[in-house]
Image (cartoon, rainbow, N blue to C red; front, side, top):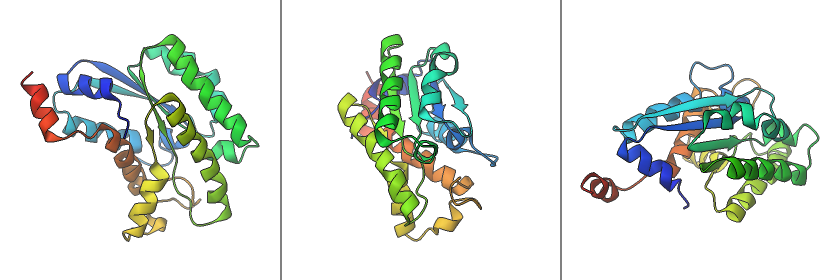
Length: 213
């Protein structure tokens, strides 16, 4: 699994860093007291007790990847980030964008970040919305994120696959989504944060080695 190595090293060492999360309502944390950004912040502080970071939430409800590309300078690069999260797909899939248009827009975001900043990038899929045609359609867009992850050698947090595993383990899908069947509950957001957190997991030996370096 590819990991955001520089960001992890900075979290371990206590080097001040800025993480910016770009995305739609799932990044913003729609209709909940705690979204995935809030849960992830708690998890990172527990895992990396010496860390000094801020996590900027640049999620906007209803946003799509083309809008994310448009607002990248003011809402992401303005903060001079050390790591950027990119989370899109569901709105794009149902707003008339083809898979290739979606891929082109995400590619544009990645390349614009790389042109203007030396930063880690993490791609993040959105939730699982059930065993239905809508979800199968959305997963085609998730596949494009996976392809871009391979092309650019950047990590991809497969949130929808993590949800599927938890559902197979017995967690009801109904407990993870709100009344609309799409937006996560706080329980769903917690699982979303766990899926992203997996990219930051490191073994105890490495932590010990870093501490004695």
